[in-house]
Length: 348
Image (cartoon, rainbow, N blue to C red):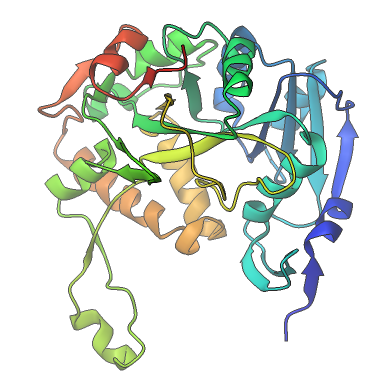
């Protein structure tokens, strides 16, 4: 039987390598591995939005990420002996035992440990938050959320991409969000989130990844069924490939409020505001990240979605294909996302 770890005990598995978390600051936290490609643009972008402290759990990076984190005066560098993809059994506060990857549970533990009583922003290295034009920065956003007693906010995950696979040649070094948009300027201008009265937001439409998987016939094996012999599973209909289109990046960490996994909180997000992420999935680093994800098997479903990307890129490269589709729009500013229904605010 697996050793069962108490959720509270996971805090003891977090080590502060450098820096000191300061109460009352606007905090961003993230778990990263080998994301040096994004770091200069990432820190520049979020500092401009008002982030005052970065809490980064480094998942055993082998590039120069750790050295970069240590050089940032506003960065608290964390480490753990538990790798992100390590499957663990955890005794939750309600008494049930949850089996999940350590990284998913650390997303809750870091928030509860360092952001208690405050709003906290959780993002991945390739996600760049965009605010509605009526909200100039995070401090303004948090003030408006607090005034309306809002505990959770949802965001559209908007994948950005270049025109064609030819544009992924070379070794660029983006230093700003503008550099990234210059390299990967397009997004699908279709809404991804629908608010419903009294219910959780609903995912609608699909991501650019989903569109491309469909165009190139990229699918996953059927989910195993309990009453079907394993040798028959390959005869079941395959699943369409897809990618996440929504996540809950901001919660107010207080008793009774937390992140349940990478994309959801345990409380319903407000329908008064919809944020957006420019999600830079299709970049010059995709091949490297795909190879590493498949080797480590540390992402959801043993990294099966990265097998989809490996298959997709192989087919696109063989035909010199384009990423752009019928709804592709060249990004010029937040107004483009607002017009597409991907970003909005009714906080005033």
